[in-house]
Image 1: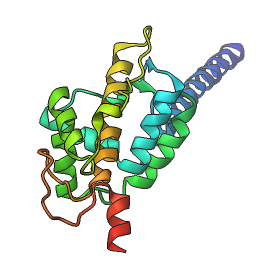
Image 2: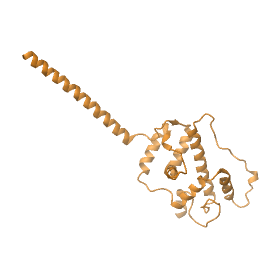
Image 3: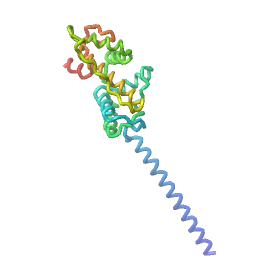
Image 4: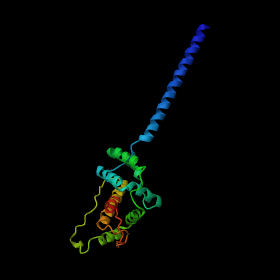
Length: 207
């Protein structure tokens, strides 16, 4: 009888240890998942692009709020570029840091600036080039200019090529609009406004 009681107590003790260990493991895994979701690194997608392309994306995000603009373009159907699909690699911590900093900040762009950028981003290539030509200073001889081609990588993923094309257009929009800061519509005409194209330029003008 005493032996049976001892055996029963031993069995109950072992069962308690197994259940306790299982509960502790589940709790640890849950805590790990929660920690990962709150402090995870941005850019955990599967599409890997070249280092220079992701660095350019970071510059566009950090200084020109490209991500917020692209989100709005996606919502309106003007873009199908999902930035969450990319692997940011060694730049991941930079994106994560900027995301946490900018989440509580107001948009960099005014509605007027945003509408201008959106209009230029959605133009076909021929119309866009025509608008760019209209921004050159008077008397500019375009026949003496070389036409520089956009960089391409033959073996890069289609998603990377799309990102490269999108960023190339985005930076052209900013660069050429800053050449003629009063040019705030998609036709290349002077509206007489004193609002600069980029947030940084607007701040400098107002200052």
